[in-house]
Image (tube, rainbow, N blue to C red; front, side, top):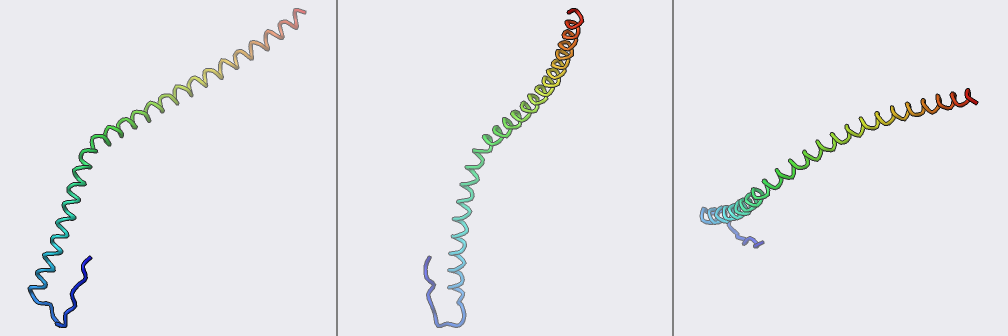
Length: 99
């Protein structure tokens, strides 16, 4: 950063003010150029980000479907286990009667 020159003058002249404003304008134009370059980079990545978000949404939907399927299978499995246990008990009773 440049050091400002100290003057003994009490007021800023128009020439000094215009130079300062030109310097400020150049600084802003440099910042604008940087932002424009960043925007270009982000535009290139927008397609990739969109694809990633779509894929994540697909994975989420598939996971939900798998959970629902597994839940249904678990209920069916539990139901069949109960039926098998009931049949085992009935067979044991029948065997006791036969002996």
